[in-house]
Image (tube, rainbow, N blue to C red; front, side):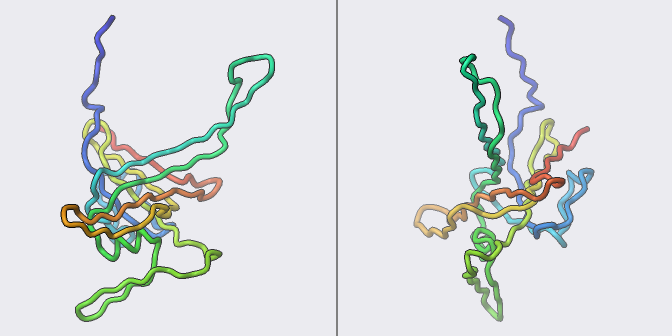
Length: 189
C-alpha cells in the first residue's frame, strides 16, 4: 500500500468577505479577483461568524428499466445554491439585507428601519452577493451570486452571554438562459 500524498498548498483555511450589490450591478472583471469590488456598486457586509459557505444541492430523478437492476441513468430535476453565514455586525443595514429590503431613514442623532409590508404578489428585491475568500496556494477566490434573496428567518437575539448575530441564507435564483446564476473565479500564478 502506497502512502497518501497531500499537496498542502491546495488546502484552504481562512475567512471570507461578503459584499452586497444591486441586482445587475457591474461585476468586477475576472482579472480583478484579488482587488476589492468597487465601492460605488458593492457594500461590505462587515464581519461574519462561523464561516461563510457556498452550498449547491442537486436533485436527480432516476431512470430505470425492467430488464436491468441498476439505475440506467439520471436527469437533473432541481438545483439550489446558497451562500450562508451569520452577520456579526448587527446593524440596521444588515438587518435590512436579511429582510430583503425595507425603508431606512436617519436624522440628527438617530437611524430607523421599517420592513416591507407589500403584497405577496409584489416582486421581491433581488440583489447580488460577492463572496471573496481563499483559493489553493493562498491565492484568492471570488464567488458572485447574481440574483439572491435571504430565505433564512431573521432575528436580533440579545442574550447575556452570546453575541448578537443576524443569520442569513442567500438563495440563488435563475437569471436567464445565457447568464449563469453564479460565477466562480480563482486567482492563479
